[in-house]
Length: 137
Image 1: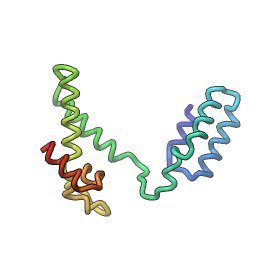
Image 2: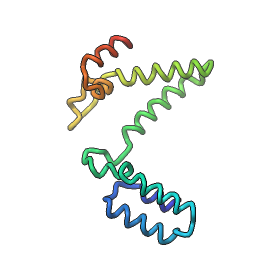
Image 3: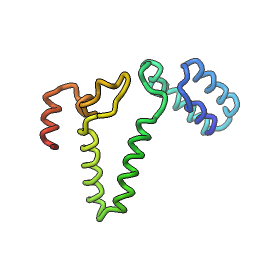
Image 4: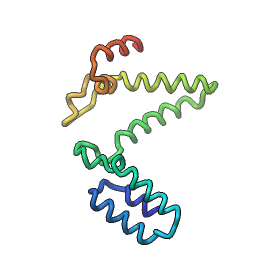
């Protein structure tokens, strides 16, 4: 499994990806779990290697890690919820607020996003966005 994890550890070209996969198959080809996993990877190769078709896809997950760190910070100060329903309500409100809060610190090629929120960028239809914005403000 560690060899397969290394296969996905970085962005690779299609040729490099399958060269490494072939080596894994040669080394562990007698293991049925390895065979099943590599066959599954082969079946899903279009999705797993789709990043090669888009040059603008980032190589890191820093943005996701940033959001996770922010959420962890918020949750530490709460010290628990009264019930499961209360937790669901809080998370729902948190994510709606997060999607409707405008960006303020974007720089470089993302500077044009300042003043816009992530939901506004994701929903191309401005009328639909305005309806949602009014509903949750």
